[in-house]
Image 1 (cartoon, rainbow, N blue to C red):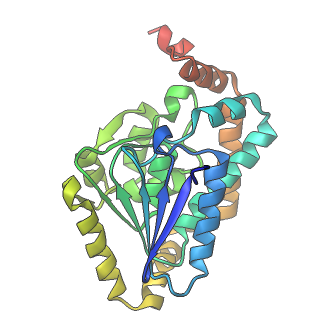
Image 2 (cartoon, rainbow, N blue to C red):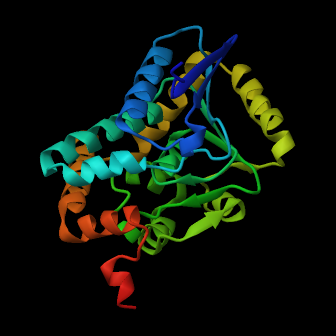
Image 3 (cartoon, rainbow, N blue to C red):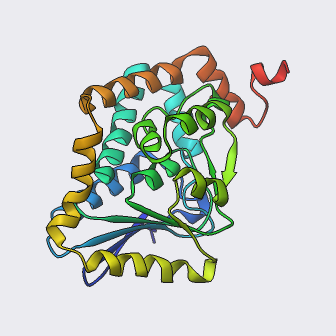
Length: 263
């Protein structure tokens, strides 16, 4: 029996999307990206849905890119990598612009694209044990596609540090810099998520749905299509560059990359 990588549950006006690859720490591949994008588009069109909760099965929220997916894209050309990056950009933008309020329920580690998902949600609640990381620079890459959303969440100054250093950080730092809105004990996580949903359900549906569009209209002054395209071009170039190829190869081979070995 095939286990679906994404589960959708409904409880009245609340829809829950659960990443369901716990054995792979809910890592992304092209299939999961497509499934999640389509599920969000379906929920966006469902007038009965008032709140969307994004959660994950198992110990981790999302480890970012799946190793097999990374291996395949490392062997692909720049054009294929660009299309792959644009698919991820579409997912992030769909979640960010979803005309429903969204809540991220973060119960474990979130790295790379997993951080992007958290940043795209309107409200993010995590447990004290959660770990975050924007570790792409260790591979000679950058979190380019998710950068508009992460920067919007934590600000340019913080992004400059975490993008460059590739350090991981915990719930206390995530709360301080704005990636998380609330940190609660594990046994209170579902209670906290439900409380936020209850607050959202008490507001005007049209006003709540339009809130993020209002913020976006005030904040964004650039061409977002051009931004997505530029970021997809950047990550595609990095993936096929000598440094990107070495970084990915070293990661997959569980060895230090060439530049780290020189230290």
